[in-house]
Image (cartoon, rainbow, N blue to C red; front, top):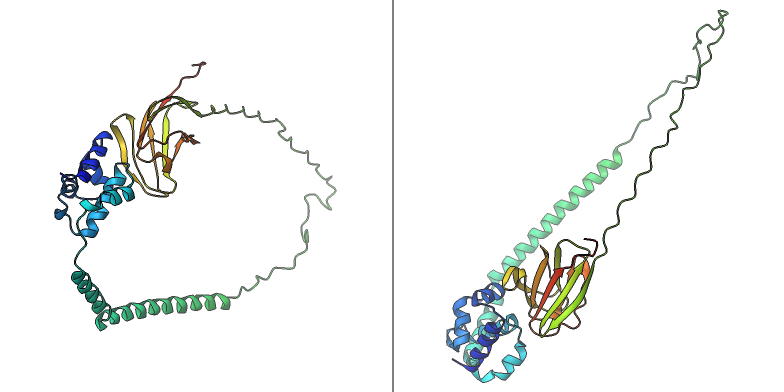
Length: 290
């Protein structure tokens, strides 16, 4: 076993992460992960993939991949021979100059232009048809109001009947009762023990956790207790994950400085959470009124 494999395996075991967890996060097959830990780099598919797999492994267990690659450069497989690189370069250049490949691109471009032409012709036809439609006004009879209408009893000596105004309902509707104010949510740091941070949640019956990677990737695990994750994996830059739990929540972050934590809509101050990895435990604190 190489020193590089020992360092990666030790970091994984200290964080309680299995090879299956890393396989789900990095999408690297388990047999390649085992080969990295044992130092059997000849089993990896080439020099480029070896460096990429080791970098992804280091990120998944919370280590700096650049420092790992630089420090253990001697353990990595050697670069491929210059002759093979040159042969691969000539093969790519030959495929780029292939006339059959160029004709496929021309056919695709002509197809796109043909579809655009059909859409343009259809649009012009619809616009022209709408412009030819004219609306003819409906002739109305020139009838003056009240013309030819005789009120009952008119000209017959019958006095006109007076109409009494109908009573209006002026009863005011009861004012709606004001809705009860929602309890104010607050999340405060209660205690710290090494890389474990304990927070208290007030103003909520359940815990809704939202994690968002702000500028870099980070491994995460979320559940109601340590090791019992209901959601875990790797957050990519800009990605956001949410889950609703009960009265307790346990969160493990590989790189906490890259993750914004929101609980019940409140952004939690995690400026002191800098260890890699760090554990965050949140509990619902019952109010005095309850």
